[in-house]
Length: 267
Image (tube, rainbow, N blue to C red; front, side, top):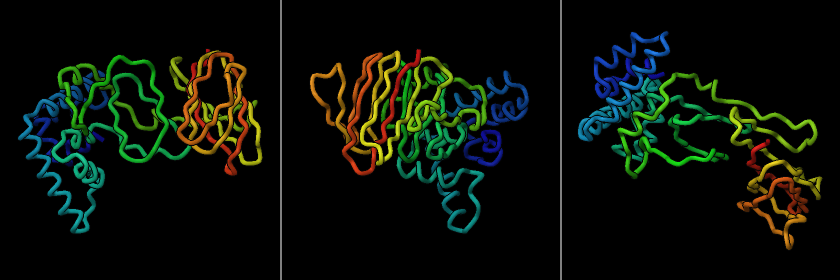
C-alpha cells in the first residue's frame, strides 16, 4: 500500500521527499532495508513543518474532492477515507499517516491482534479492546493532544506485514456452546465472548485460574457468587471483577438473552 501511495499520491511523495521515496521503492524484497526506508519516510513526514504538510494536505483534499465530484476513481489516494478523516481532523498529519497503514474492515466475530509499538487508529464502529499492561501511549495523529514526534519515530515497529496476518477468528469452546475464545498470540491476555440465548434462563460463568473482567454488551441478569455479599444487577455497560477460581451464576431476566465479554489470562 505505502509503495503504491508514494507513486500515486504526489502530495504524499512531496512530504517524504524524493530521496526517501526512491529508497523505499528500491528496497522492496529486502525486509531489513524496507524497514529502514519506511522509518526514514515516516520520520520525514512527521518532522515536516506544519505549514508544509497543511499546504500539501489542502492540495490533496482539493484534488481528491474534484476527482470524486467528476466521477473519477479516487481509490489510489484512499479518497473516501482521506475526506472522512480530514472532515473530522482538518489539517492533521494523521490524514497522511493512512498511507503507511493497512485499511482493515473487521466483520462481526473477527479479531485483530496488534503488537507493541504498532500504530493503529479506530475509524468507525464499535469493538472490544483488551490491552496488556502498558506504561505509555504515544500519539501519532488524528488527535488534538500533544504528539512526541522523536519518541514516536524511534519506538515504532516498521516491519511491513499484510492486514491478513493480523486478523484471526474466534474458536468455539467444545465444552460450552455459548463460549467463543479469542486466543491472542501473547500470554498476557485472552478475550472470551459469552452469548447466552433467550431460551437459557440460568447460566454459570465457569471459574478460570486468573482474575477476570466481565463487560455486559447486551441483556439483563442478576449475578450471584459465593464471594459476593448480595446479588448483583447486570445490564448493558455493567462491568464486574471476578477473582481467580471463582464462578458466577447468571439469572437472565431479559427476553433477548445476554451477551458479555470476558478478559482474563489463562494460566
